[in-house]
Length: 400
RNA sequence: GCGUCGGUGGCGGAGUGGUCAAUCGCACUUGGCUGUAAACCAAGCGCCUUCGGGCUACGGGGGUUCGAAUCCCUCCCGGCGCACCA
Image 1 (spheres, helix red, strand yellow):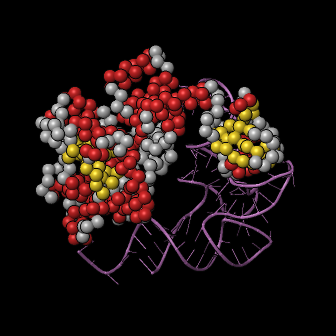
Image 2 (image 1 turned 90 degrees about the horizontal axis):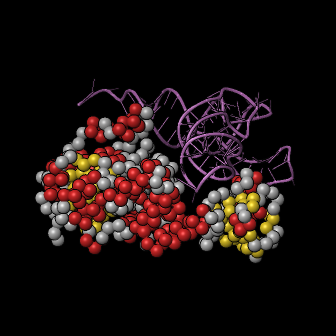
Image 3 (image 1 turned 30 degrees about the horizontal axis):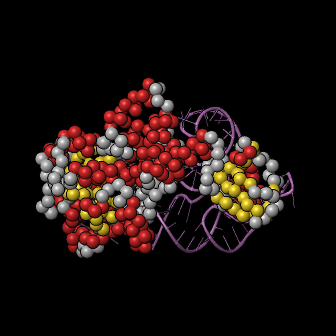
């Protein structure tokens, strides 16, 4: 396959959704030369769901693929068990092999939404990592010094704070570095939080007589609550979210983030993104409209254009016009059941105390009757009833 | 292993015998304002309640006491120092 060397495309490849390239200029020259590169991206199967934060390096991988380079996607089934602490303020527990086994199967399917798996090389790193002997690991470890490791910011912070740092954590960068050796990577993609691990590949490759890989690091992107998007915060938009849900999540993102999301999470042409940002600044464009478009783009990427249209219609009907979603939770209750008990039984709220608080706080209303509020906690369910609890929760009670 | 300090709610962190379901900050939930945005204001934030109150909780277990998150014993877990010397 021919490798494209269009300078404009290469420029976007090296800047869009990219925070840092190491070493700085060498990669551009290499890309312009037309040499076909082996580009590596590894993801550990620590959770069964990929979220948009992960899509940043994946899209970058796709950019390389589209230029004609050979991409290598590695599921870190061996590294996942050890656990990476790069993005953590504390130790990450080791995963069980079973968890990893379950998760890794789900990965290729999700990744397939973004990249062409047919043309990619797909690997599990247990393939080579599980075969290493203690002697070999010792040899790899000798390439690095303890000072290298403990000078990492997050490790240093923990050490200074008197927190425990497990010796196991030292192993992780070695493993990831050896992945690069095993597949002879020319380029590795990762997030900024991966900087240390990704860089570990370079000296190791040199040790094995390979030229050190180039490194492309993506930015960390804010999640729904403004903190870094991460599974542990629960502020993610996931590849597998249902269209309507995904649409709604995008709509709840802060306005200021919209151009950034366009830039890193979509491949909407950059010129369009720029002009949109300008009209937003000038007040010509309403932020809500830009966000709607963003939501459509994202849903289209992970589902389809039709799903995106439908999600938007539903969204407008439900929230902008105060309607009720088509598919809502339905619970069967006996006639005369106290509302509080019915809410708990339906799973909409977790305890009677919570139900009482919500009712008393005016959070429960009848969306079919002009959003009239129910504030009497002794209300009973004696007929079919459609309720809204808070902004997002809906439930319909049917009489058994 | 020895010594020492510590283990409190999702997190951080108060509290050292009663007035502690536990100050406070963050996070979160709900209401208001809106565009399901942000910011801001207000309320809530263990469970049950006939709203009087009741029950279960401060690493686990046992004890002292009228009464313990607070004192004692023991076990578990973590930090730090030491482990007769590279």
